[in-house]
Image (tube, rainbow, N blue to C red):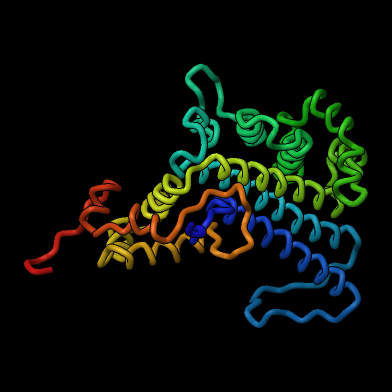
Length: 315
């Protein structure tokens, strides 16, 4: 019996989310450490800073700078969640078609407005029941509501009374799971219109990351290896700037060479060829990959519905 040559442990959406969220968190920490260092040391100005600048002199000015860094990171994390939902909807078969409007933030025919990001996340998790802890879904609601209030100064679409009550009911869970995090205090700070503490923010980011990880693993668990390999190939082709050129590059000259190029792409987009792999992840052998996707350019173009560029005689 042949061992699988590749299994799919993460979707491209998961990779994009982890990169964006991880980078935002790392860069925030760098900026905050730099701010604290600058307070007690002489400033070193960038060589390309051409406008006048002076070091903050009051605690309020330092806090304003810190809050600016927090605001930018909150925006980046929320955008990463939005992007995750959109990407999973574009990989055919990965999610239920009935979720397409929700995942892409489109208004349903019988609705008066588009769904909010927390509503979209909740719809996804409700569709795949018992996959994500309800506290993680609520944490996304806090993150987005706090972003709206702290970044955009919007107070209309805040947390509902029910959501606040449910969050308080999960306070012990958050404390145990996230290093003593204080959800009750976080809700008080949110209600007062202030910034989150680093502990608050770390809790919300970590909860969002766990939510995405849990749902991503479940979605992939439902996939068949052959079908997902085809869907992932389709996504990679159509998400490239020039699908026709990408197809030409991958599927020339066809056969095992084409399958080999796809294998390399799969490894960059959530695939794993190591012995250490998640048992529930969809997989296929190299031989099966050759059979399914070792196509010539002409056959691949017909299969994926991509028009090939015209070539001259003999080309």
